[in-house]
Length: 248
Ligand SMILES: O=C(O)c1ccccc1N[C@@H]1O[C@H](COP(=O)(O)O)[C@@H](O)[C@H]1O
View 1 (tube, rainbow, N blue to C red):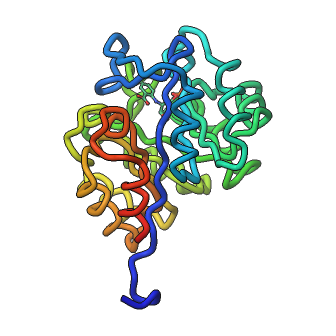
View 2 (cartoon, rainbow, N blue to C red):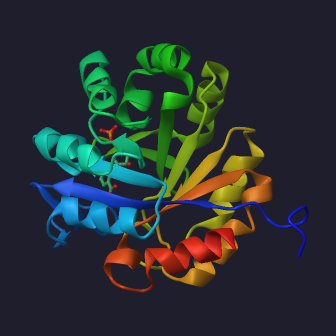
View 3 (cartoon, rainbow, N blue to C red):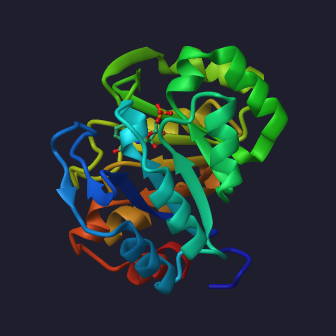
């Protein structure tokens, strides 16, 4: 195939979710379902060695409002210098946002703050542009906030508001799929992409290289990337294999 009619690559973001200083995976985002995968520095170093350009780094304790992992996150970001880091979890005001950018995150995902504090979210979207994405974490079409424990409004209403605010990118997570290895919610992604010209990043449910292929088919519709978590930790495929499928 010539390089002119090839599907553009899908950017893969391996995930390192940190709770209690450890790399963990949750099932459907529920506290208490953690599987422990050891030192986050080892996971991040592994993804970097396999060729990841981006790392999706989450402070789960901050997302749940039960503390934070700032020291560990700072070390991880310092260690993977050269890799772009998308950071989320508990970034809800100027102080936490400036701290996240200050430790070297290239992009910040706002979750709860975009739902509960729309004026502040609009102001930082205007101020920081591409450095801010909004995580649309949904069950059905109802958004989830505060560690996915509270309802945060209707997806389409909130998206209209974020579009008006000029949000540069959306990270779309089907919470019911997250950590389940059941495959991504393609229909939801398509519905979101129909409502925006901004790039969309898929999150939740990837279980196989076939899922990566299916997501890559959505790149022409506006899918920019996909976050891969449990499947990598469970050994369903390697990141190097996934990067091949996402970009061959
Ligand atoms: O990623 C998870 O498994 C997860 C589970 C439960 C809550 C949040 C989770 N992830 C990330 O947290 C941000 C939201 O944090 P906040 O609401 O801004 O504090 C969300 O974008 C997910 O990336």
